[in-house]
Image (cartoon, rainbow, N blue to C red; front, side, top):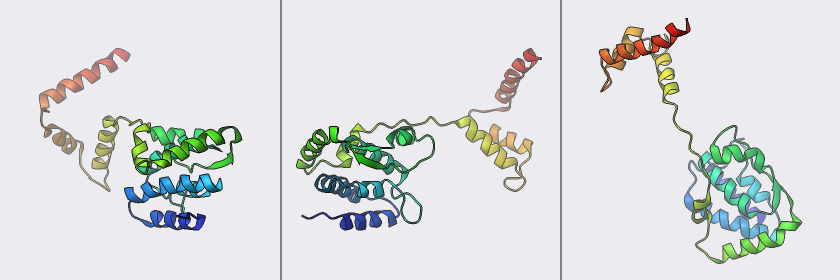
Length: 197
């Protein structure tokens, strides 16, 4: 099987146009790109996959991009801007930007090439079998912020146009919340303010 840059670029273009990334397409690319890179020492296809398409949108969805960044960073013996994209790749914090591999590391090449060749020997090895190694931190949901945003939208004249009394009625209508609990909570909130005065 002859893998060429053009074939890989065609496949990447197809993936970019898809509404959702299919597991099978990324499974194939994850192996073919490594095999192509071993033969050619060319990282342009992986840079294209982890970058933006011609429409200035990322080729991969955020979650698939995070997995792919960690997958290729673990294998490829090239310098990259991984430290710049690491917070987004692992924690989904900051701004997502393309991961770009640049210069081949001569010191790491032989060891990494051997590791890649061994990895590719097993046909079942691909990005999804490797994904158990992925580090992802899930950010806790900020419910207070979500409630504040909902109340602001509800009271906004152009959106919900609700009065404060309407908002409070909606809160009291929540299961396990009643007027007495609400009044007790308001009293607790007033105590620290009174202490501060």
